[in-house]
Length: 239
Image 1: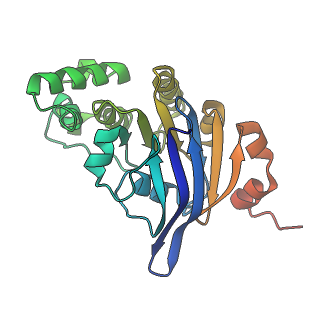
Image 2: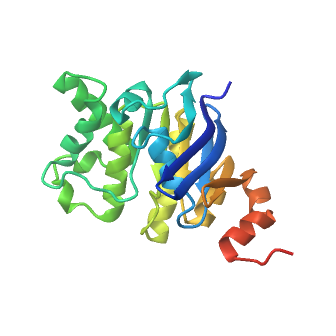
């Protein structure tokens, strides 16, 4: 049985269908890349899995247990954490305090939250920045803080939404290394990314969405050659 199962997931916003019957099996310990053109439904998929949107149809299961309809904090407490496309730390709080906010979803004691937060900051390379105000961080550091805040919840499954967007080549390489380290620690990782060279090098498996539908799935090299994927990205005329 897959760790996370997505069955017939559909999400409509009025007359717009953002997801249309998406099916996924996410195995424990894998790094799954989610790609697709703008508006393909990638972030909506994350929103539904993590409880920010209720699906119009279908369900999500964790360890065989339905979690569809649970609130985001409850989904997180069960072990699914996420980052967001637009990073928005609490700017006047310290880096440590921002990470502790994630930890408090799991623990109540401040010292335990602090310990979890410090461990998460060390993992992403921000332990030396713990006392700084979050507003003083660079974009790359803010993205790492977003990952640390999610890690502080002690997840089993981590959903990363465009953690490489806007970064320079050296920063992208560092984020690729961080994602690999997350998987090597035993986490199951889902990554939405538009930096195709990065996601192709990083992923064990790729899923491609287009107009809310899953159009391809498989190993990166095979997916890159799939005519449906080429058409979705480049607009190649159907023969």
